[in-house]
Length: 117
Image: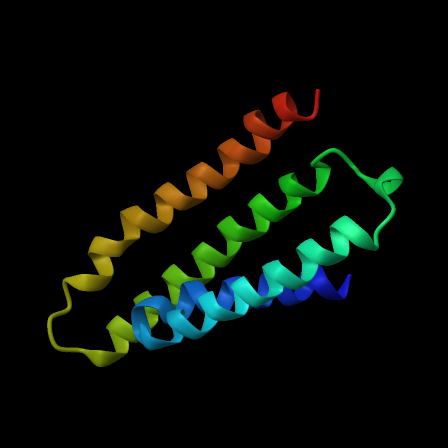
């Protein structure tokens, strides 16, 4: 859906540019707050509550957020690698990426199987 894809795009922009351009975080927080007000009003007054899935969409959202974190980490590794200078930064970020991948695998294997029952 369009709302879901817009939110994922905003999460990618937030995670990638949080380190590269911290000023963009303020604009995205403002955008999330405005969207929160708008969609909260729509959920309360417009949408039919019989379509409630009971949080089943959250499992997909959490997986996509971890993938956006991976995209952000790889992007930051690329920027640090291209900047040159002290080349110790990129090898020190490899354990972070590996830990995030292991966490993503844990979420896919264990957590959501328990959460879906």
